Structure formats: C-alpha cells, structure tokens
Image (cartoon, rainbow, N blue to C red; front, side, top):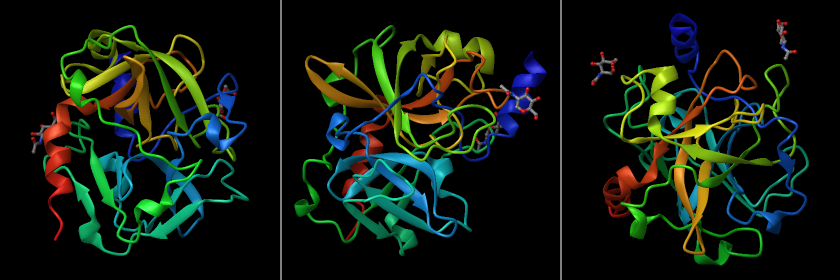
Length: 262
Ligand SMILES: *[C@@H]1O[C@H](CO)[C@@H](O)[C@H](O)[C@H]1NC(C)=O
Ligand SMILES: *[C@@H]1O[C@H](CO)[C@@H](O)[C@H](O)[C@H]1NC(C)=O
C-alpha cells in the first residue's frame, strides 16, 4: 500500500482526479455563485485547474497549477460549459510577475501548494449574477472544521478513465481529521497546513480539479477553506481521502500578496 501511494504521489505532477457521476452538474451559474473561477490552458483550450476569486482582481489557486513554464495562463470567470461557454469574463495572464507562487512550495511533498494570480485588467464591474468573490475564513482561524460538510467543484475528470468534464461539476464531501490523510499519504506530505477530505463514495476530486476551492458554511457564510492539492494517483474512485491546502494557515501570506504589487 505504501509503495502504491508513493507512486501515486510521484505521478501527481499537475492535476487531478475526479468528480464522478454522483457529482451533480451545476444547472445554472447562479446555483453555485462561488465556484466559477477557472483557469484554462490557452494552447489546448483545456481547463486544467480551478481557482477561487477572493477579490475582484485576485484568484487563489494551487502552486502546482501555475509552475509549468510551458503553460500559458488564462483566467475565465463565470463559466459552466467549458466547450461552448459563455464565460462572463476572461483574460490572458501575460505578466509572469502577476503570478505569485509560495516561495517555499515543495514539489516533492506538495507542502505550501498555494499561489495567487493578479487579474490586471479586472475591475469591480466584473461582478454580476455569475461572478462573485468568496470570503477568506479570517474569523475562523481556530474553528475545528473536522466533520463539516463541504463542497468542491471543477471541470476535472468524472472517473479514472474519462476525459475532463465539459460541464462544471460539484460534489459534497466531509472534512476529515488530518490523521485520515496521514494514514494514507504519511506525515511527510500531510502537515498542519493541509486539510483532509474523506471520500468514502466514488465521488472525489480528480485530474483537472486542482486549485479549485473547498468551501464550507460557517455561521451562515460560505468560506473558501481549502485548495485542491493532491490525492491518490492510483484512483479517484476508490475512496482514498484527498488533500487540500488549508487556507487558514496562509492568511498572512495571502495578505502579503495583496500588497505586493505596485
Ligand atoms: C522538500 O521535501 C522533501 C521531501 O520531504 C525534502 O527532502 C526536501 O528537503 C524538501 N525541500 C525543501 C526545500 O524543504
Ligand atoms: C481504467 O482503465 C484501466 C486500463 O485500461 C483498466 O485497467 C481499469 O479497469 C479501468 N478502470 C475502470 C474503472 O474502468
């Protein structure tokens, strides 16, 4: 088992595993107003990662989504059909300096898998019924999230052998204690700065979902508490837990990026 998982993690270079058939397809954009922030690889026109809009001009995503030097980034907001659109807003990311990657991101064990993208051409006028920001859980740094219901979304594969989904999908999963992920991926990978989600059914995150937000409602407000980071490359359908970057561990880093641009 250990070896299998190790191989799994090695092959987890970019993106991920599944929102299977149990995942509901968002039928309308306003059904899930917080989850339409998707990065797209320009060249192949394939959505390869997700992200969360945390200010009108800042997207929160995973470091491993933006490190490939051959990928040209574009950000599309307010889209649920990846083939025919429409996207209510979109722009290429042309300046490398607009992509902020955590300086201690470790591509071996995925520690500090967090990045932000500055949307240079966005203004507050991009807000509409389909595009909105999701708040950071600043008032919940010490809230225990274990056992909470959460939602994760993306255009990732819907099964181990499928292609990526044409439509945005989302699935409800339960946040688990970190020890559940430690038991599978080990303590070298799973740190206090991760958040773990149990996937006891075949529904989970999968290739293409990376960078997307894990959201949960706390005191009536929906917050982004995790960033899709890693899972078992062996399968998205076999009930392995999935690992996320824990947003509350990076609130200071995120604030620093807001002020890092001229
Ligand atoms: C990254 O993680 C690997 C595996 O644990 C470790 O050997 C290496 O020292 C880490 N790199 C840095 C820069 O911390
Ligand atoms: C996926 O494809 C592999 C290789 O072709 C096969 O061994 C496996 O059984 C397939 N998995 C499913 C769930 O169909």
